Length: 135
Image: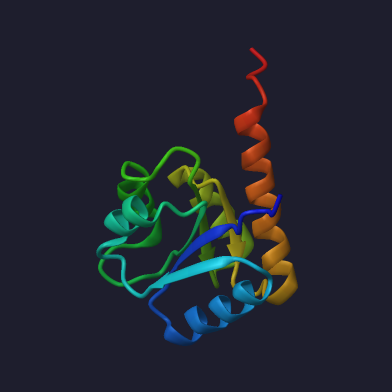
C-alpha cells in the first residue's frame, strides 16, 4: 500500500520564499500548493483540504495569526496550522500559543530539516487522531 503524500498549503507574500519552500518540500515528497495573499486563504483551505497550512506571520492585509482564526473555521477536521516567520523563536512561540496555532517554524529552518519537522507534526497529528483521549 503506497503512502499518501502530505498535502501542504504555504501562505507567504514573498514569492522567493514560496518558490524555495515549494521546491524543497516537493523534492521530499510533499504535495504543495502556494498562495501569496492572506485574502482567500479560508476558501482555499476549505476547497483544497490540506493536512498542514504553513502560514507566514507578516503578510499585508491580515497577519498570519488573524488568517489562522478565520481559516480554521473553514478547515476540515485534522488540518494543522503552523506559523512560519523570520521573527525570533521566542516571539514566534508566544504568538503561536496566543493564536492557537498547532506549531511554529522559523524561516531559518530550510531543506531537509523543514521537511522533517513538517512530517513530524503530521505524524503527531495522525497519532492523536487515532489514540483515544486519556481523560
